Amino acid sequence: MDPLRKQCSSAVKMSGRATVAQRCHIGLQQLEALAATTHGFLGPNKRPKFIQDEDAGDAVLVSSCSRLLEHIELDGSVGQLLHEMIQAQQKVFHSGTGALVFLAGVWSRVALECLNRGITVLDIKTAMRKGLEVCLEVCNQSAVSVEEVSCQKLKELKPTSALKSENQDSEMQNMDVKLSQNLRLTLKHSRHFNSQTENTQTALNDVSRIAQAVSHGCDSSMRLVLKACKLQSKITEDAQNRSLDIQKLVTCLIPGMSEEESCVLRGFVTLLSAEQASVVRRLQGQALNIALVNGDLCEKYRHVGFNRPANIVHITDRANMSSVSLEERWLEDALRKLHELSIDVVLVSGSAGVKLKDRVLGANVLVVEGVKSSVLNDFSTRTGAIMVSYVTQIDENCVGRGVTVSPWRDFSGKNDLVAVSIVTVSTSLVTAVICSSVSAKVQSLEDQFWSCAHRLHQALTDGKLLHGAGATELLCIQQLHQSRQTEMENPQESVVLELMAEAWMDYVSTLMLNSGSVESKAEAWTAIAHRMRLYKEGEAISGDTDGAGVYDNLTVKSEAWRRALDLVFLVLQSDTEIITGVSEGEHVNSELMYL
Image: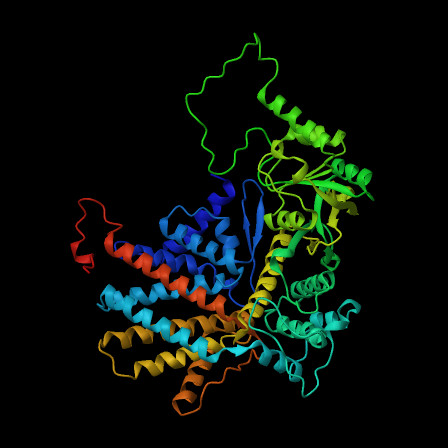
């Protein structure tokens, strides 16, 4: 086991040991204990954690639930389920994991409390599912359109310093156009804006205000996202398509430089070794041919689904075949293929063999490894190249044309790497170069960038947003209290809904504490209770709170809530069917809970 992972695993086990009791729904208690370690990641002012291995001296900085669980050894089934659920959320939305984990923890506590009160598992699941439906209905009813958000930001809110400077940047002048009183915004509820030519600049301005609404305190990262959006629009020169295309966006991480050096560039920018950069300098200024390989560039690679035939006997009429290995023959065939087709650049989604990389340097062929599939697809579209699984499959029809390469910046004095730009004439790819003088912080900055990009993209996709800073959750508390007052077939539902409302109060109070609006959780609970009393006296809870101007994604929040409850139900059902923590021969009948 990796020492770093081992130490982190021990830390989590120790943190949960005091709260995980024996012989009683251990799975739910483990889930609650794991979730408690991530409370500092909720809200805009995240508290990063340094995970350090004292023996090896290695350390990593994490500021999200997904990164934390990546660096600890989750040898239990509950931890693995939680990790898989977070990965599923992160893969699609790149945000919402903090809320997912927090709710999974507090809803596990709700289920445990219900069990302690004698409520059956079936009634717990029915009532909690009803409570979630009530909250989702609150989201649907309280959601506001992006048009309203844009107008609200224009009328009342001042941009933060970073975003304000972005609006004043010479590159972003088109995003600073004022709306006339009679101008109707023409944002469509689809993936892209579809507006008339006369409203093109207005659409860009709308993107800026919506980005400000979902920046969640990550102003510098959102500034990069806005520049990427502007650059994509400038490249496409399409007046009817003004939005952020996530599939045409990539990142390049450069540690050792100031964060102010971060920028966006047209094309595909990546870090290469000094030897590869020398090839780039020799190829600079030429129109180059390109090949795209979807897989590893080595002799032993086989595509997914390949089944190696069994019981095959090779027969030859040569007396001695041991002098040339299969790898050497494959290497010669690959080099001959690249030379015959005059291929200058090879982009590979996987890795390339060491011997091949050494040999192509002398042949002035640039091989770039680890290229994302979206980048390969763009180069395929722009150059006419056809992706192949094996280099030996390349023929004249698979070769793309019109690629240029050039060194962008030389970092060989610091880390022996050179940033290189690979572009085509019509490429719509944009690379966000993310820099930090603290190497351990670069990964967190990249995560922030992708979170901002996906929040903006999802806002434009949904066409609706939810009030943030806990405002929507306060409405959920209000509605859950109101639902308890209605007649119910099962009186146990009222107890479950009350406990779910308390869980939401825990969520909002933690959010308020982490954002700095209160000094303690007790103060936050008092403020929330005061709002609830005002509601009971007839005053409705407004969607606007102290965090006015902060908005969340409708789909992201809804999916995070659903995933959290699904996870709790899965663990609850597993705990019900499998009695854990009881050794054979132990006399613990009095402590078992029969369901």
